[in-house]
Image (cartoon, rainbow, N blue to C red; front, side):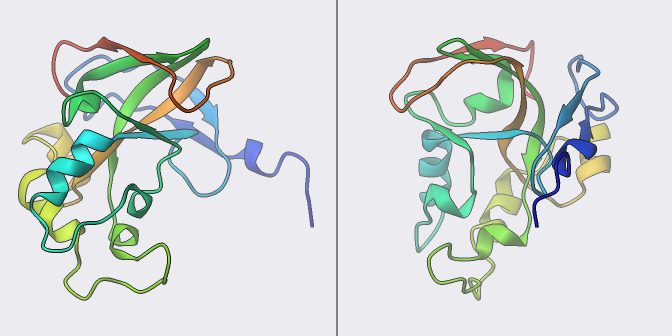
Length: 168
């Protein structure tokens, strides 16, 4: 049964306690059970991860809303904002990954070796300090974003990024 406003009652609140860079205070409406309105990942980061796996995974294991091509691996760690067409998004936290990434999106079967999560834990944990204290052993892959200004986006559009002083 549809209930108007069901997802608009749940908010993501950005926190700066675990960032190395300033994070704007904001609340965003979030549909479903996500941490932010939009998860953005990069294909080059997936390629780097797949070099460490016996059986490559697809971007679908990470369930992003937007997958960007043509930038260096892990470039998303340094993004402060991105623009795609007229749509402008603010990047406010790395996406911590859970066991859902180990489930094949076509079969629903969990990887018996806990991949790709196990491989990510070997090299993509949050840096030591406040972020590691907050995220513990959850590796990061992708960036959580919120919308600053609306606009239509489509496959193949150029993505422009404004960078932070440092990753995370």
